[in-house]
Length: 93
Image 1: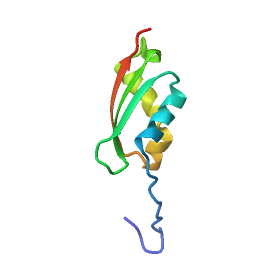
Image 2: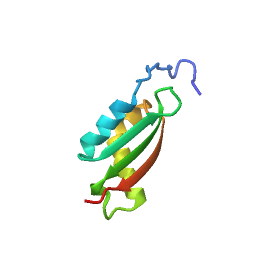
Image 3: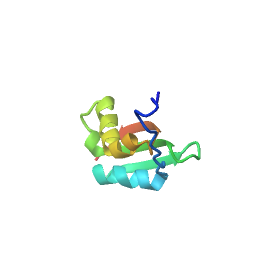
Image 4: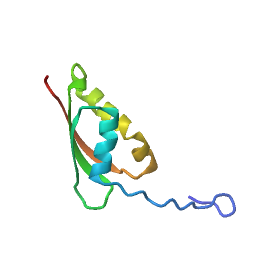
């Protein structure tokens, strides 16, 4: 709740993302990964992704997801990325 005279509403324009940008961000943090990203609502803030990477070997599914989400931390924190349906897989060498 905003209190009159105490706080002011601050407008932050929403940054639009696209699937290619998300893919590139993940690839930067997880080099060599195979990344597929789709905008499943067409609104630029709800995506689904499949990330296949040999670096996930020995990691739990939770740890794998945390690694991807950490790569996207800035986009999540800013609100540009609102939702990500994520599947991770281990690429065997």
